[in-house]
Image: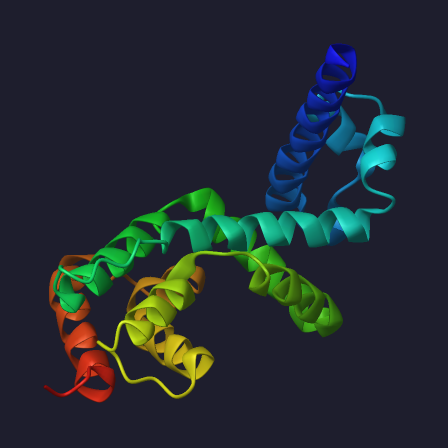
Length: 205
């Protein structure tokens, strides 16, 4: 029984090593240029091991994409606290996400992912479906705040999209397309965006 647990643990470690190597390879070469041989070499495993965990490069890319966005979702995860001002909590979510978007490796892979999504949008649909099943992120916070009666949100998905639309205009898209930086105005942007969001959705008391 102990041996089985150890074996499973090693298998999971190898799977994670392959996934991390794939992320690095996709960053470096894009989807078309990436090879399973290079991924196996980076992960320090055999090519057979790579295929044992991921049957194709397409599946591996999909899982690397899910990993990318799940890390982004983790950065936006803040436990809801009914005794803490809503503006402070939303600002924390925004600041943590902004800091995550500072990472060059994230932005580089995001460019690769979006280019491939444009070419094959069905991959975007599959990846987003997986991500929606994961707990955490802004959506969980909004759901908890609504359940507590502190927000009045008829459509959680729409509200989350509105929040990110306000936020990513300054924190994410300029970095992806190298259009400059709003980092110097970060605090002002976050505070004004949160104020606009709460003006629409905060429960009037």
